[in-house]
Amino acid sequence: MSSSATAKSGERIKFIYQKMEMSGILVSHDSRQYNIKLSSGYNISVPVDSIEIIHREEITVSHHSSPPSENKEAEVEIIATGGTIASRVDYLTGAVTPVFDPGILGENIPNITSFRYEVKLMEPILSENMTPEIWQRIGKIVHEAQEKGRSCIILHGTDTMSYTASALAFMFSSLKRPVILVGSQRSSDRPSTDAYLNLEAALEFSRQNIGEVGICMHNSISDTSVSLLRGVRTRKMHSSRRDAFRSPGVPPMALYSNRSSTVEPGTIPCSMEKVSFSSSLEKRAALVYFHPLMGPDDFHAMCSGKNIVVIAGTGMGHISSRLFDSLKSLTRDGTKFMMTTQCLGGRVDMDVYSTGRQLTELGVIPLGDMFPETALVKAMHVAANYPADKFKEMMITDMRGELLSREVEF
Image (cartoon, rainbow, N blue to C red; front, side, top):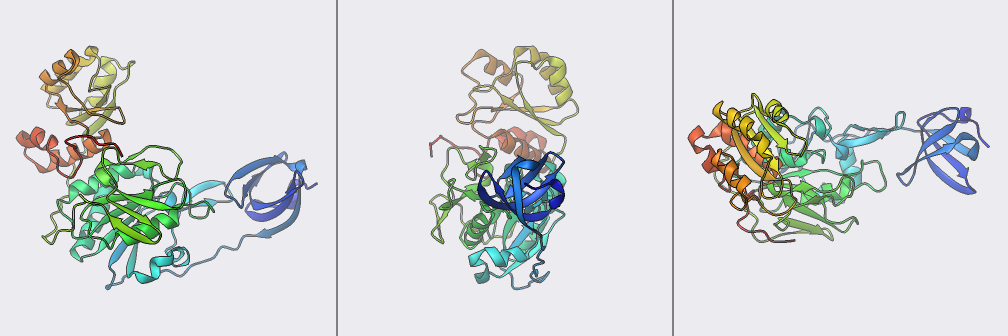
């Protein structure tokens, strides 16, 4: 059996464990156990005295050649913001960290050679660290690309991708070319990664007549198809599955399978009009998720100083009556309140129960079946770009496909 001194963190090893030969990368170790990332992509921890290391070698880091920093003939811009799709495992720590080398595109995506593309690298950021200021920076890059007649593919972390997609959708009243956010659930260095197929599909979607902001992710847990989902109608429904994203109530805008893509009926086509763009956002905003423990002081603390507040209420759009006095006080101070539902399906209907009717009388705006995250971003856009007396009218108006007249199951 081997001792911990026989291998160093970050080395590739072959070893025998429980009479089976395995291989992987030694992530870390101490006097008691090895932590190993297997070649399959999974991690194991094993006691030091339970394995025999039969081969070890240092990992050689390959340095890919990147495409030119500027390609005036490009038809698509690939904007790398970070996230799992632009991350790899740091084998000295075992953590997934954001890093993107444009050279991996040519090595791993079969259809890349048929595209003229330009890569723009932003400072890599994990999606939980996204902010409205970064949405605005991305929006300005997309606007410049649209003015050049280019499609945009945005590499983005999955956890807050729906917020960024909604922000971009509301920034543009029309698009000359598709804007596609693409992510992955597993980093690009894992054998089970979904990054490359998602990017392959995004490239094919970028050539289609789609004048919308979409999210491009696996359509199933296997590598058979990829969907392009409407950005303002998409939610992440699973923490780790490759088909984590769903668009309740509407079909995908496009599908990719067997190296070809098809656009579904009802998808908004590209516009030949001048691109109308505004990145202005009201940032004194909040999304409040009601729960039974929430008291008036809690509610007031979360909403105080905000100009707009989206409530994710229970069922058809309810919060406890014990919060009503605080809501009245905040409304008198100028805060605008909107109601969405915590439910994954259905819509707000505040005329059914007395609580809902009381909230409507207090000025709370019901938002139908709009998702809470979409509602927050839309309210930020509307408050910054329309007169105050038009706020309610615009919030209950379908602007980018965020509101459905009826729900259809898909």
